[in-house]
Picture 1 (tube, rainbow, N blue to C red):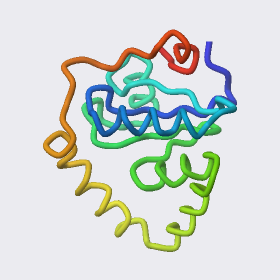
Picture 2 (picture 1 turned 180 degrees about the horizontal axis):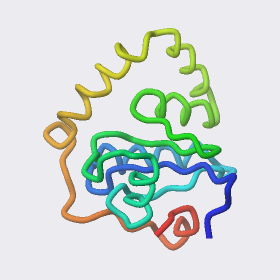
Picture 3 (picture 1 turned 60 degrees about the vertical axis):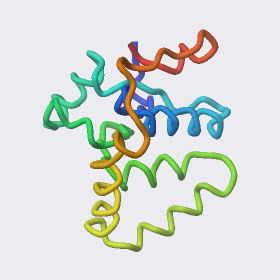
Length: 135
C-alpha cells in the first residue's frame, strides 16, 4: 500500500545512468523519504496512465509528490532539493527557463544508453533497500 504522502521517483529500470542516479539519491536521502519504482513496472505504468503520459515514455525521470507529476529537469531539481548536503542549492537553476533546462535534459536522455549503457532487465534492489522500492 502506498500512502498519499509518499514521494515517488519513477525511473528507467534498464538504464545504467538511471540506476546509478537512484543509488546516488538513496545515499543522500538517509531518512528514506523517497520511494522508487521503474517506469517499466506495473506500478510505473499505472502512474504514467494516471498522469496521461505515454506508456513508452521511458526518457524521463518522474517525481510524484502530493498528486503532482514532475518530469525531466523539474523532477531532477525537485529531487535534488530533498537530498542532504549542498544538492538543494541546485534549485537556483529554476531561474533558467524550463525549455532550456529540458533541452539539455533531453539531449542527455536521448543518448543515455549509448553513453552509459543498458541492462537486460530492471535492477533488483538489495534486501536492505527493498522497502524503498514499489513493486
